[in-house]
Image (tube, rainbow, N blue to C red; front, side, top):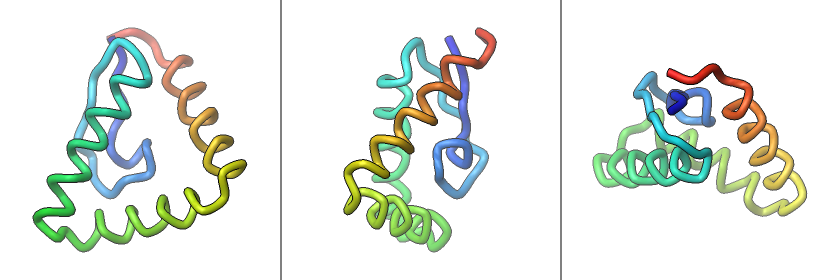
Length: 78
């Protein structure tokens, strides 16, 4: 199990997510993002805008994803 925070994944807070795989971690982060969207949290909405812009450039999004995945894989197990 490894842990990353919302901020480490491009978000706006220090909420921690712990998972076996990066893909599981992304799903936890998405669920958190959806909750923050429902609550209209301004900092998270701003972070979501940055990710949405990134998603408009598939190569840049893939590079971001792979970079974050490598960061996850480099972490020591909890």
